[in-house]
Image (cartoon, rainbow, N blue to C red; front, side):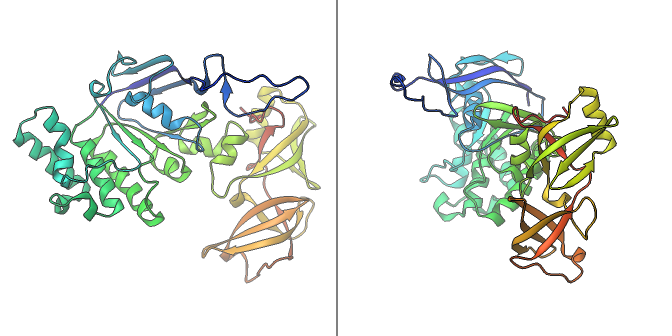
Length: 392
């Protein structure tokens, strides 16, 4: 077990060829990757303090730098700048085998010619650990992961979920200071992913070590992490508990990335009248909650055009009224206990989640007219230019 500190970590990949200058009069091609004199900046100024025994999840879309960051912690990628400290020691130039970390990969990386027992024991054999200690460690890990009955089998005789358990077991037997996991569930089907998520939560409680987990799946991030780190284009967008990033997204990207279905966004106006803030959208004028009033007042936010965000479950169907917004149904998805209504409101696609018990027998087909509204306590207001949440 150990604390991990990442201070200003950077990763720069050298350019394969020199950047060609645009011809006179031609616009330069734009890209999300920032290109410096030294090369492509894949991870920029990554700062994070991971407490001993904490479970941290790095999450973001493909290509955002999360796996690169994990590989730098593991020592599989060279660190271009900054300091990586594990258990109080700077390890930038320490070989991977000497960092006392264990890593579980997306593709299992098991030795096909070895049995499950041999795969799990291999790293300890390399360290010249005695047979009795190896046997005890392997069987304890197998019991934790419920794979004792497979110890004599080879990987080809196992399912994907069983292979991933073996890969995790191989890491457990080393009793590492830090446990790194790079999208370990992405090759599994949905049902098995749900099962393995629960297994990892139970595993964490059993072995009680420091975890750094990488995923592009926000459901995994929200259910597994003590804190989650949301990344985009190599830059940290927000760090917080799952509830914090869901309730108080720092910017438009975080708001749209966290939550399923994703948050609805509207072009709206933030109004300041009589010392109170309102949002005006689609003909409705909604007063913000006392908490949001206080946050905006504290920051001295001026009236302005905004992007308004409201999550699908926070929208309610309405029967007229001053703050009802008119819409037309495009798609109605029955999900059992709830209905997902995809509607068009003032040219915007909006998703509304309605519990089936609230429908009162009503059904909505393509072209049906309806009205919806929402309260001032569920509004998220974002600056149109910077995309930052105006409350924070």
